[in-house]
Structure formats: C-alpha cells, structure tokens
Length: 311
Image (cartoon, rainbow, N blue to C red; front, side, top):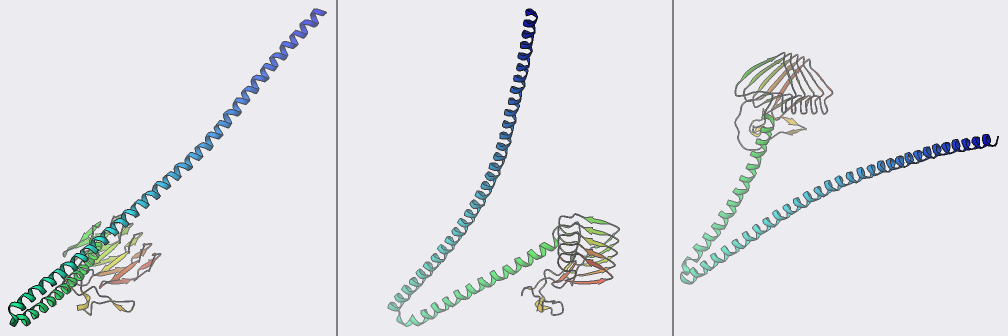
C-alpha cells in the first residue's frame, strides 16, 4: 500500500509539474505576444509620427521655397529700381554738364564777340525746345508700341493653333463630325474664310468652341457646342480701328468700343449664323460677339453656361 500511495503521489507530482510547465509556457507565450503587440502599437505610433514629421518637413520646404522666390523677386525689383534711379541721376548729371558747357561756350563767345550773344542764346533755347519735342515723340512712340502689343496679343489669343483652322479666303464644309478635346479652339474661321458646320458636335475644347474673326463667316445648322473652357461661339474683330468706322462700332455698357488710333488692315466684319443649334455648359458665355463681331441665332437652345447665354 505504501508503495502504491508513493507511486500515486509521484505520478500526481509529475502531472502537476507537467501542468505547471505547460501553464508557464502558455504564460510566457502570452507575455511574448503582449510584448509583440505593444511593440507593433509603438511602431504604428512611430510611423504616424514619422508621417506627420515628413508632412511638416514638406510644408516647411514649400514655405522656404516660396519665401526664397519672394526674396528673389523683391531683390529683382529693388535692383531695377536702383538701376532706374542711377539712369535718372546720370541723365540729370549729363544734362547739367551739357548746360554748363553751353554756358561756358556762350560766355567765351560773349567775351570774344558780344555781337553774337543774342544769336547764340536763341540757338540754345531752340535746342532745348527741340529736345523737349524729341522727348514727347519718344513717349508717343512708346504709347503706340503698347497699343500695337495689346492688339497683337488679342489677335494671337484668337488665332492660335486650333483643331480646324480656315483662313485667307478658305471655304470648308464640316458635316456629321465630332471635334473634341482640342488644346485651343475647336473650329477657327480666319480672314475672309467661310465655314459651314452641319450636324456636328464641338466639345471639350481648351478655349472656344467656334471662332469667327477678321471677316470670317461661320454658318451652323443642327450642331452642338458644349463643355468648352471659353465661349461656345466667339465672333470678334480683333485688329481694326473702330474710331474711324462709326458703323462698325459697338456699344457695350453704354460705351463705344474703341481699340486705339492706329490704322490697321480691314477684312470686313466677322459673323456667325446659327440655326437649330444647342450651345450649353460652356465655361464662359454661350455666344460672345464683341469688338465688331456679329452673330445671328435662329431657333437655338442656349443653357447652363457659366456666365451669360448671349453677350
């Protein structure tokens, strides 16, 4: 019996030790899992902090770049201002030296030949007046150059590369076609060109859908112009002096449209005729006629344009 009890106690001890070892192993496993989970949580938190720091670093780099550009622009403006001031001061010094030299010459002549003093003084005044007239002419030429540059920029904006461009008396018929996603305008009728658009769609152009300028004539029937980033239909005379042609002048906001006093070549009045057409969902106006351009609309649908339907 003693041996039997002893063997049972030993077996119970061994079983308890095995159970203790198993529980201890499970406890260590759970502790390791807990440490791994805590380490993963810390790693996730560190990742979030690193992401935030990277974003702040990008923002600081962008702000530093903007400040650098602003400083460079400011330095350029300051340099230009300094150069302008230096030129003005040099000009005043030169004028002062010229006047002193002229006065010295006059004094010498007065001492040598007093009878010619009045003649020299009159020549001096004449030279000054001619110099003033020359300055006025330079300012006038600069003003005229600005007007020419403005007209050129306006003309270039209207006749830059298009999907379909007709000019110099060209004649074209566009029937049952789709013009879409042009970088500039879709269809452009230039000087003395004639275009007939029939049963076609012009959409998604980078500027205007259909443009008629400088005598260009466009006739549209049963067509659609939509989703353009400029005007749907744009009729404009971009290089004519309307101050010399009262009949071609337009009244916008009770004011006469004038483009300057310089004579330019005349191609005639541009015009657009649209019948049974749909002009909608354009970023600016559905139809824009300005600066001598004309448009006639018959039984057309114009809707959902960002600015005006017709202007």
